[in-house]
Length: 166
Image (cartoon, rainbow, N blue to C red; front, side, top):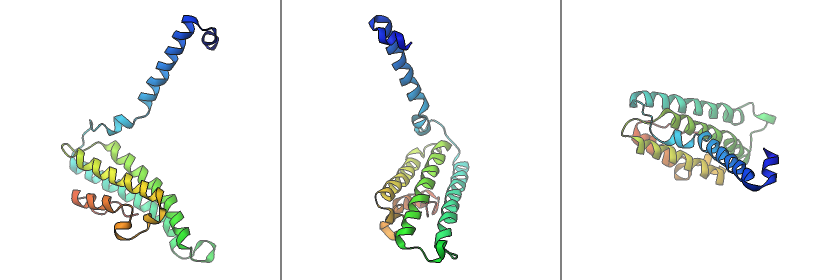
């Protein structure tokens, strides 16, 4: 096929076009982003809530486990870590855990008629992730400076409590 492409002419053009279409087809089908976020799958709210709380619990447990190794005695290296070290640890554990959490929640589907609220919560978590990437200090900040403040508010309004606590 490569030799056909080098030859040029019609055969090369057709081969090139076919290859391009094949690549585009796989790129469109393989990403999964549209299918996961289409909202076409629905899930009863009670099941959704139970599963989301389990997903959040797993993410929070992972964050607490890793973060706790640095925040509690015996400290790595025998000395309490600096605030900057704790910010770095928060960045290393919170951001991947929250990304995984969003991906898993989105894969569940959405309760019928509540797609907008769930999408807003997921968007707020993603905004918190972006804020944490811009300034990792916000991953440990208090109050409105906390990267996930908006997500916490939306989750509370939806009935999920403090799902994002990391």
